[in-house]
Length: 96
Image 1 (cartoon, rainbow, N blue to C red):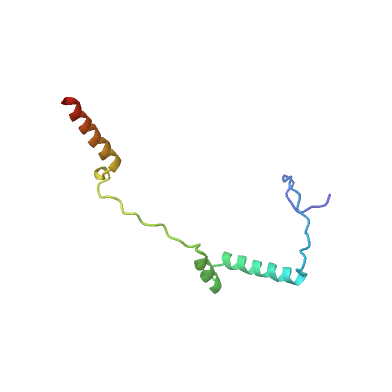
Image 2 (cartoon, rainbow, N blue to C red):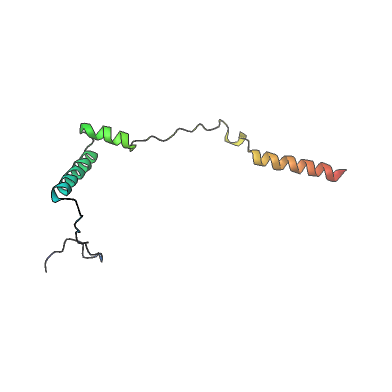
């Protein structure tokens, strides 16, 4: 049996190539060559154009440093404060 170019576990058949009107074989070959160059530059960060392309694409981002409160239990929550205020106010109204 001859190899059809995909894994035997895969049930997906490869799609047949369709010709694009107005696009010649040379244009598609140029596009494939450029795609190959771009993928190789992305794999090899030592290439001079790869760092510039990756940095302009936003691939290298650092995590934002968040400042944590010095005392995690001392941080105030406005919703809790508002409910506490309502509770105290309603308790005072019920006592009168």
